[in-house]
Length: 358
Image (cartoon, rainbow, N blue to C red):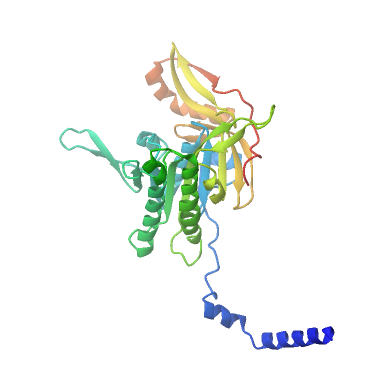
């Protein structure tokens, strides 16, 4: 009896499927198209970054996270991305909430900026050019940052901003959420919750959708994230690298680069010295691709960051850089020969970041 019921059920199911058109169902529900994503493209970073990491740079149409202790190379990577974007007619959008920005540094890196001078005094009063810039004068909360990004993408969709957009946020953890402001308490849990809600549920979705072939423009978000080292949970354990502002952006990001070490920056300073005067011209730093959902490559190595960008950590590239800059250094150090020394900022060994969320 049970066998007969099964046979009857199978026969009915077969009859239903024979008269069913999946294509018609897709058309009825609006599911017949718009499933293809654009071929993956990248904003190229310096040849040194590419050689050390084996990846081209920053993936377009994704959220990328550049994290590490202070002065380990995060902003250098951010500016290399901005310079490359300008050359490809992608509009850089600077979101500066940490307020340590320097247009002089950006210019040294090759970013094109127009200087605006007062006609009467000749004093430099502002900068302009092929970019957008906003900072804490306008943005006061995490919600403000997300709303600003979404507003620009809305204007882009309306045809009022005909560019691919590269959002460059420096940095996460430097701005509170609305609830923290209203309560006059900088509550880390509230801030982390706002990051998750505003970016995970809103901005991340819009960035991802811009990768579809049906989208005229492709938008990208690159975030700088400072870190701190949590004490080991057990004696003789390994300290854990923690992101300021929580891990919401870690989970949203498809590409994460960590600079420096876990416990400290792990950098060493390279200086030109003469008669008690010195010029710090570079730092040697560690970097590691911690998360890569684009092509899966994960790598680690050492690189040298200079005011002009990354160079390889080898004698040839260091000598070429010294030769290109020595006339500038002589303006500070005076004529004649000078010595080159290396000074360790921190002595910690390179650590693996395997204890991070995946």
